[in-house]
Length: 389
Ligand code: OSB
Ligand code: MG
Image (cartoon, rainbow, N blue to C red; front, side, top):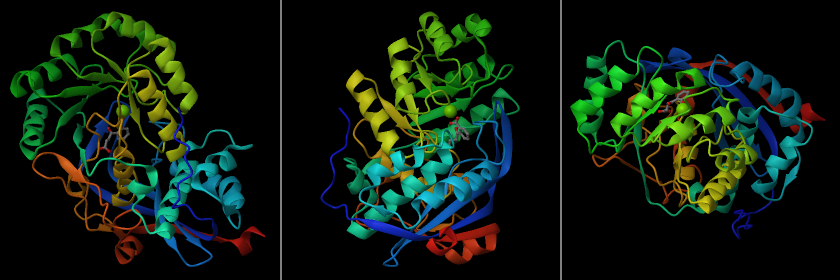
């Protein structure tokens, strides 16, 4: 089953101008994962405008460095300018469903760059149809359950403090980053402090190899809801080998890059849970197909995060409102990441750990703060149908 119903709301549009911008947004605290750490997020934003003047902002989730995926802001900037935007500018777009095909033809990879355009087209279609993005996508939730992803810390005690504060704030899932040397003791301390009922997971960001299988099996003692991406991105088969030895469900993040790899993962038994990040899989069309593939196989999915600004977060919240997003997403409120976000209103979470889906608002549901974005801008460029001609 593929959710391909052409929605009554959808109307044709033609994008005539795209502004690209890089902003620099400092994090309130350093965020470390096994493959690197950052203190300030460089973020690539797009602003898409159609011939009637309707416009929308979108976000490319690529980072400064290629530690999580091969893409970076610089590769995305190049791909967008040279290969991707030229085929969008001036092209009549009948429905955002077709944008993925348009971008994939003759251009392999560059999923995050493609997703920034593709998701922007969904945002624009929602603006034009005067419905919320969630409604356009077929969302069924008014509130999405929220988890927190806590970066690597210097000691188990510090990690325990952070995890306890997160539970007190209402988060419904606590995810701990792990890495060789910061794993078993850290998880044991948090499990001990939070008790056996607290939903807990770990994320290794590909830090281990199959040789670590006995070591990783020690995590089975902590009743985790999942272990996310223990092995390298290319190691689907090895994840299947590892899953045979673990009782803890494996969740795949980095290795699922499109619907085919989601099918492969489930067919091989490389895990049972998928972290869907729309940027990693090329946008909403593929994200929804992966959602449907997992649903049909009887497996839950959840929405991951890439330390997005309030703009990218808007797209993630809309996606997470789909029915099979049954596990709390990495959708923390603005204040977890930024002193001040780039949107109004900022994203908030209630004390029960839910973020409200802005169903009463047209489009992405938040207003980008143009002055603040201008202040944070480190580079900008603009393409129009004229530059494309
Ligand atoms: O693996 O999920 C990940 C952030 C950057 C790169 C990879 C990951 C993450 C997170 C952050 O875990 C989740 C968030 O945005 O809160
Ligand atoms: Mg992950």
